[in-house]
Amino acid sequence: MNKNLYVLALGVFGITTTEFGVIGVLPDIASAFRVSIEKAGWLLSAFALTVAVFGPLMLMALSSFKRKSLLIFSLFIFVIVNILSVYITNFYLLLAVRMIPAFFHPVYWSIALSAAGEMSDSTEKSKAAGIIFSGLTLATVMGVPLATFMSDLFSWQSSFLLTAFINGVALAGVWIYLPSIQNKNGPFKGFPCHIFHSKRLLIGLFLAFFTIAAMYSTYGYMADFLKNVTRMNGKQISLMLFLFGTVGIIGNKAAGKYMSRFPFQTTLLFLILLSGIHLLIGYYGNHFIPMIWIIGCWGLIHSGGFLISNINVTSSSDSSEFINSIFTSCGNFAVTAGTFFGGFWITHYGIENIVWLSITGMILALMMLIIKKKYTESKL
Image 1 (cartoon, rainbow, N blue to C red):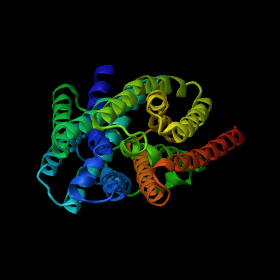
Image 2: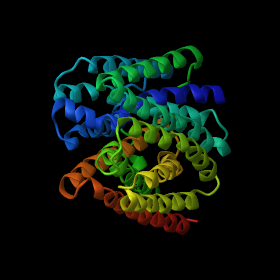
Image 3: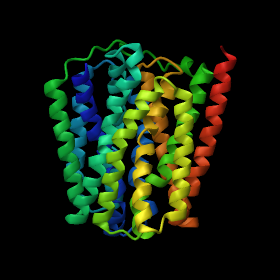
Image 4: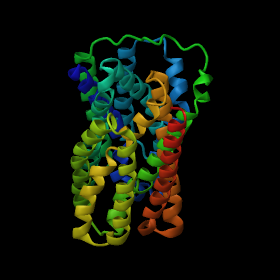
């Protein structure tokens, strides 16, 4: 079982590096195309918005195709688009081209998460989801800092070539090692609106939305914060992103372990600790040495956010591909909202105050967590 899960996680690593790899490159792209950092942030938010809007629709439209073939084709699109991006000299064309793989991002995510649930026992579903989400953590550990390093060492175009290579390796791994995946759901016949009648699911989605939006309000502009507030250079920022992701491996594993046993307590502790980290960032953001320690703690806590949010949603309903596509859409709406309002906040209040937007989002997430707990208890 584990081998198949790790092969699926390899693909998640590839597509997530494409989505989030621009985080460390945004200052260079803004400079190269002579646009503001807020406008450069559209490369992240537009990708996420496309995933959010079209995720469930793409899964429904392609539901009759073989699952493994869809995984391979999705990764192929990511390879081609990353190569094409190297030769683009207009910012808006780059933005448009980058949105193409976003249509296939939720298809891969949904199939991978659903397959992970089907390959594992009911008591091991959180751990199986944790392995899939390790691809996201690996993208943070290697993909984002390597893309940043390549951009600093050569050019922003080289970071896209690196991302194309990563997706190519992932494609080969899925093609060679992953067995066929049975489509137990069959083709979708109409939009299953009935699932939204579940108040527990809706509360879980709002909890996930506020959590992820809070995470990405600051993280989406991490490179710009470290450059302009902490006064780090390109190589130092690459090292900080690497540190952030490396400790995240531990955080992601811990989240998967404890969410299966103590979901409420784990989510509560996550939100409290991440809020505390953002307070420290706000206070020590312009101090070089303290920020190194803070970034390490930040990565440790931050990495479990997507997994924790996913389990809070999927535990409210079945873990079908469609529910996972709904979560993927919700998560990417949250990334879009986080980066959009983050850019707005930076423009009006300065990059040094971005943490307060994240803290506001986490307070809203805490409120949804309490509502979820009270609703669940009332139904027992």
